[in-house]
Length: 208
Image 1 (cartoon, rainbow, N blue to C red):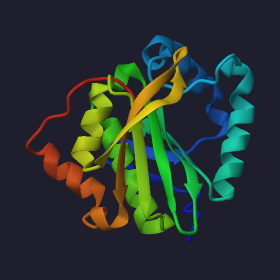
Image 2 (cartoon, rainbow, N blue to C red):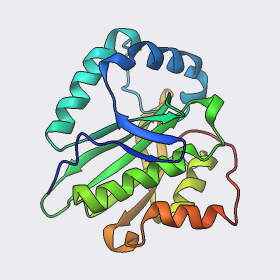
Image 3 (tube, rainbow, N blue to C red):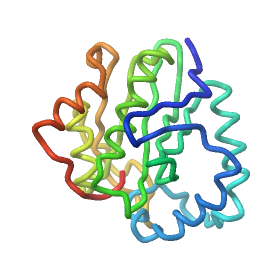
Image 4 (cartoon, rainbow, N blue to C red):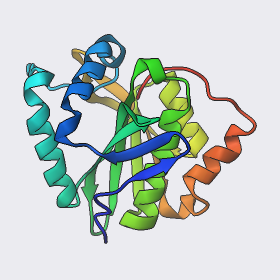
């Protein structure tokens, strides 16, 4: 077992690094521009409305503490050095499970450039090869066509439908569950993605 944190990952113009308090201004600006874009896909707490501006510092403090404890890997996604999204491995449990789940979002202005598939591939390879996780899971709303393409390209296996799984955009929403184990990813997800990209261009779409 290794927390694998802090870590910096990257391929070509895409990078992943730990989130930090200094990201506040840019993160708020990106999030403000993407409120409508992200609302149909991001989990919410019923009845709770906390302004992002007021909660950013507390959020970063919490994420970093969870990362140090080995329960989370919170990455900022960059494109040519600019903050364009996040990929987080959360819900990490060790012992007989040794698994976690992946969530992500991307700035609408950068959607369709293949950023999130590469970011998820980099994070997955890091989790399997360095951190020592055995299983990764991604849960996606059935309406999120772009995220469904991401898991298909990376070879995540469908495991069924979870009814009213997460509260999103004012209601409890069904999700489709996908998973991958270390044995299924021995060739590396980045290698797998790059091989598929040579025959299939990335299509624009929505964040997951």
